[in-house]
Amino acid sequence: MLPVHEELFSGGLYVTHVGWERVLPGETYPKQDHHPLFYHYSWEEGRVLPEFCMAVVMAGKGESQTKSRHKVLGEGSVFLIAPGEWHRHRPCAETGWDLMWIHFNGGRPGEWLAKGAFGANHNYPAIEHADLFLEEFKRLVTKAHADPTRNSLQLSWQAVGLLSHFVVDEEAGGHAARKSTTGDAVVDAAIEHIWNFSHGMLDVPGVVEAVGTGRRSLERRFRAVTGHGVLEEIQHCRFTRAAWLLVETDLPVKTIVGRAGFNSHEQMRLVFHKRTGGSPEVYRESGGERK
Image (cartoon, rainbow, N blue to C red; front, side, top):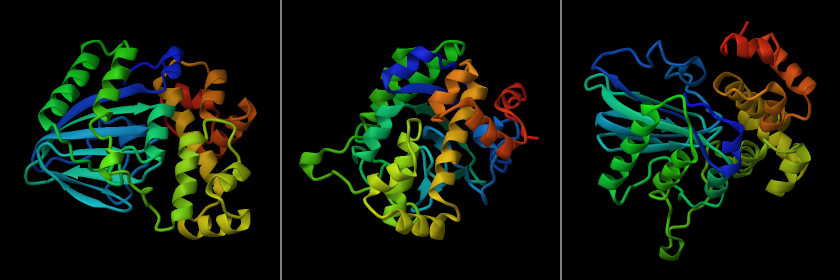
């Protein structure tokens, strides 16, 4: 995990976590020593992250799945997961794998994704200059691990360089449609908007306006495919973002309230009490453990 100091938030993109793993053939996955906020999941349940995850299979084989696509991964395969996007991945039991990853967040990558800059196949992009991409990826991970107590805008720009390999050339006809995850395009648009903009003053009417439909219609369709309402999704997104910031940064709680999109400390406290049984301060002290 990399420290994320407040000044990095102004750059539009900041790296939060880098790493690599070697999973041997037949070894249990995910490993038990993985951080619970990111890796406490099973293949059956999958997971949702509050930030972007980009990973590369350096050796071996595996598989990755989102709600809309399933992909067999081989050496050199890349996958990109957006905030709020359900997914799961694992190495092949017969081969294991060597995997490198970076996690990052910020308003810029969310805007680029919403505009379709990465294309419809952003989860599993085809990298034109694969050797260059892999070299840049390894350079970023190596630099971050050389001094894991520091973070910098240089790492942010290196991450932007990696994302540049994903950009689709609109003039070549590559600009893509919005991704689908639930099977309902209106609900997909609402979820995407929530996870990209709920760090600001977003409410249910704002989501309704963004997707261009009636409130009753959106609530009905949203519950039909997710099992909960639009407000619950907003709160879940803000809770997930705040939980990560509490455990993985040194930001004061009063700063996290605004960064996560809550209107007040009391509002965040009520959400944490409902979901964890304790306050945000207790959650931080416990390292992310729930009561």
